[in-house]
Image (cartoon, rainbow over all chains, first blue to last red):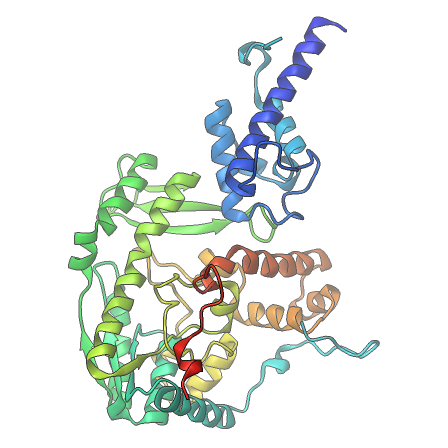
Length: 102
Length: 338
């Protein structure tokens, strides 16, 4: 596997883990291994309401140092761990993203 | 949800909200007498009178049910209340001939840090913000369920304007500080209720009650809620029947919580109350979204989003309705009385 692809995959895993931990701690109130599929819809799980969405926005802005535009606050970007991780990754400029931990 | 017979034609237009005001007033008055005298063993009622149509109707109902001499209206303005509110409230007091007291809660709110904590939160976003600016919180994002966000809109006396998305921390700080207003008001209502052996009336209508638009232990706290089963347009029908002054009936619903003028659509409903009434009625009567769409002249997709929004707001505000929880069943002494 090329090194940059490996790094990219590791980074995505870290992003997902960070998002998952935040959700488990603040919305599921469960243990670290609490069940939450990466693709599960927060809306359908009734996990996050409109105030929860703004909390997620603030969380990703503060944790990943990105700026979320109003028109980016959509279900496409915020409705699952996978979608949110993908959105965050797309906002992280490659040159300043965190180095992979492998 | 009320289910309809399969294949039944579903009527969904504003006529479903029509109400026989005379009959409904008589029914509420009888129930109110029973609740206050028999169930609660209180001699009368106290209510906060805001100058809005809901509390005006509640005052009118109470005066009819118990007699004007058994109703105390409290006017509880603070420095950011619209002066018009108090004038309108006085119209009701005078029309009904009920007792009233006015108490400005600004000093109490000051002592609690309501204004300073809120202003500090705003200033982290708008550094030039000063207490003489007008401001409000609005909801943005329409019916795109789950992706609404809140904005703070502020305007300086010389017309400079800021309109910013509220981050979570500031949103929570601002709302918690602002909700002191409703909670302090309720304290004063209960002060009078206790000294007079009265019950406290809650003035929420069905939209507010159903969608959880009240402050827990603030305006949500009460002993009796005489119009919580009535849609807003039905409250207006009762207002007309009860002779609530036209100046009150003509005003659009307002929160009167922020210093900048704001109607309830901007913070709560996202729809005019007539449409919100019909949407809620339709939702609870199993009316398909497509039928609601026709009635409201919106797309099927919008009607579906409105339904989802109704359900989302119910979920989001379950906590507001929740009574205290117990570790095990604890009997309520009254129910065990011989």
